[in-house]
Length: 180
Image (cartoon, rainbow, N blue to C red; front, side):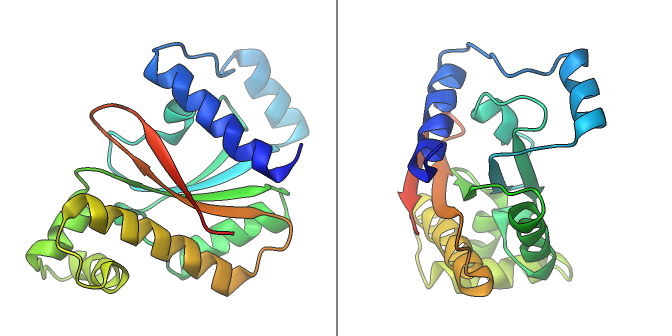
């Protein structure tokens, strides 16, 4: 499968999700197969921890298809880079998507200047990523794009495509912004 086909695979899955037609294989047989033969995800999705953002559902994927890394604000730090690198090098995933979303609490916290001790670790990173953007949706896009750029800069993935995307929590639609 060509790398551009991987994004199309997610786009097609997103269309099924929006239509309420889930076809991802989550069967006991699929679980048993991946337990016996290992996982072979075609994509890595760095997503927000927000409970409304469920990458496997949003892209209509089943067990073993997406390697998901979740952190509030879909931020990309060393642990996330390590997870992405593992999926690229050891699992041979061919696509990395940093998935931002509308109504993101971490982005809102960064925009409002939240400085709670541990939350500040995230909001400082998001603030740097959004470069002064004030609109919450535009800031979520900028944050996702910055995460994708960080992955490209840190990992130089030669055999993988990297993209940023924005998930609309109201409509279910995902829009992609190709990075590499």
